[in-house]
Image 1 (cartoon, rainbow, N blue to C red):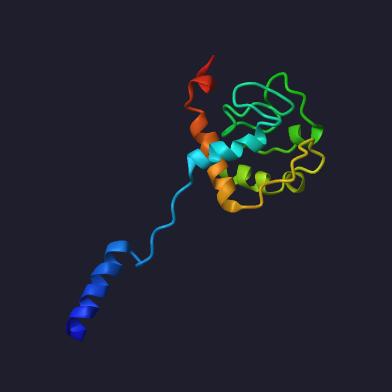
Image 2 (cartoon, rainbow, N blue to C red):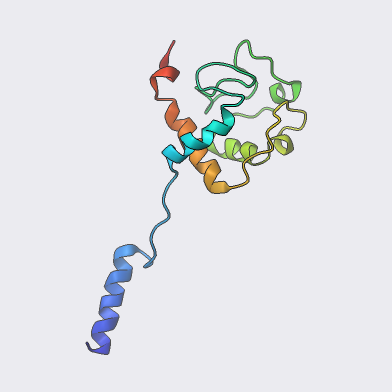
Length: 132
């Protein structure tokens, strides 16, 4: 194969994949559900436990689930949960909301946090989150 032909093949291969490297996979909802087992020690999707329910979490202001006894720190935090604020909170909960009663130290791995957030986001379309 001539040098020009090899270069042309390399350009075609690189062009087909963008950079020649596999694109990083998006968040893994199935893995997120597995990781949610850590959360399930205190939380559930559709009902309150030691911690508040997670159905409807994204878009909700922190400390506002009716009937749940939040810490003053969480009620006064001013946080509105979205993917960015949840990622920050899950990394180090007590650093983000000092005085919170959340006792979990956090999820250090960014990929695990992304998977967990993707699961929580997807779970809102489940039947258990659609109950009136």
